[in-house]
Image (cartoon, rainbow, N blue to C red; front, side, top):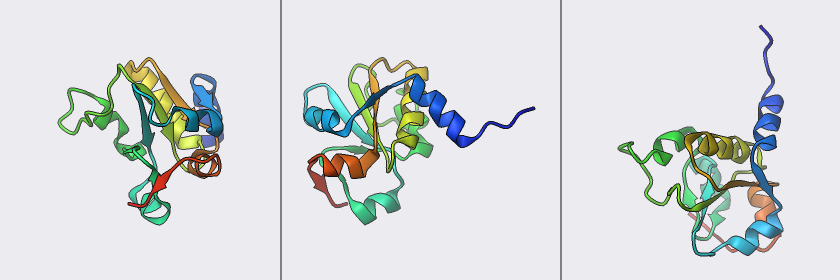
Length: 128
């Protein structure tokens, strides 16, 4: 059995989802039908804040909060919406985008460079 590296798994996820440049993602903030999802951990948000209006769903809870049949479903994770995911660098959000795609979400994307790239590109941020 060959062990696959985390880098390989992220590369595979990135190959199967839409990757957005931060500048393009910033242009979508606040667009009707688009939901930004921050998949970083709570401690990361406490330290640096998040994109204004973003839904916080830690990567480890994504499947449960994205599943409409789950008791912990996050209503703003609607399969009919465009879902734009971000993390610190773009790796976890690529994995998350792949997961949502596998769950049947049709319009998902991951932000290249993550939160710091979004902030640098002009995204309005808030503190938690």
